[in-house]
Length: 278
Image (tube, rainbow, N blue to C red):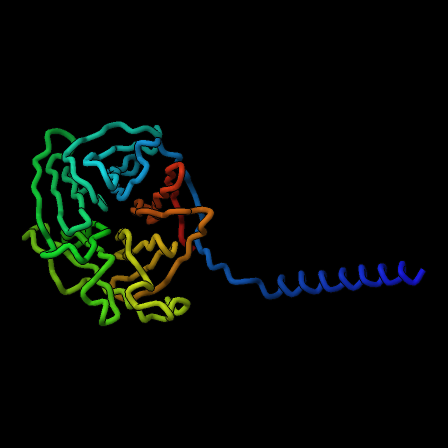
C-alpha cells in the first residue's frame, strides 16, 4: 500500500513539475537563433555536385560553376533542368561565378578572374591576375551595380593580424582592384564571442558573398553555418545561424530580386534552397 501511495505521489509531483516547466517556457520562450524561413527548395541533378558558385541570370535561371570542372551550367528554376553546359577551360579551383549582362565572371582560388564575354555562345575569354599572390584564398564574387564593380571575398587576408578580413572592389571600367577594403569583417566583434578562444582568423571564414538591391551584403561562412549581414555603411549588423539539418554543407549564395537568398547546399544530394531572413 505504501509503495502504491509513493508511486502516486511521485507521478503527481512529476505532473506538477512538467506543468510548471511548460508554463515557464510559454512565458519565457527561448530565443530563435535560426532567424530564417525556407520558402522554396530544388533537388538538383548530380551534375551540380560540388557546385562552388551560383550567379543569377534572371529570376528563372541561374549559372552554376563547380570547383573542379571548367564548365558553366545554366539551370532553369522553373523547369528544374540543366538547359545548357558551356565549356571554357580544363583547370580547377573555381570558387564563384557572377553574371553581368552577357558577360560571365569566374573567380579562382588563387586570385585569378576569368572574363567570358558573350558567354552563352563562342565566348571571348580573358584572364586577369587580380592578386599578386595566391595566399589570400579568393572565395566569393558579387556584382555591385551601383559602382560597376565586382566585390571579392577572401578566406585569408593580410589584415588578419589586425583583426579584420576584407571585401575588395574590382573595377570593371579599369580592370583594377582596390586594395583598400570596401567592407571589413571585424573578427574581434562580439558577434563571434562564442569563438573568442580561437585565433582571430578562424572566427569567421568567408566562402561566398552576395549584394542585394538594398545595398546590403551577405557573407556566407560554410564552416560555422552562418550568414553575416553587413550594411552599406560598412557596419557588421547581424549574424544569422543556419541549421545544420537544413544546410549540411552550405556552399554558396546569391540574391533574388525580392531580396530573398538562394543557398546552394552541397551534401549527398545537391539542393538549392530559397530563404527569407527574419
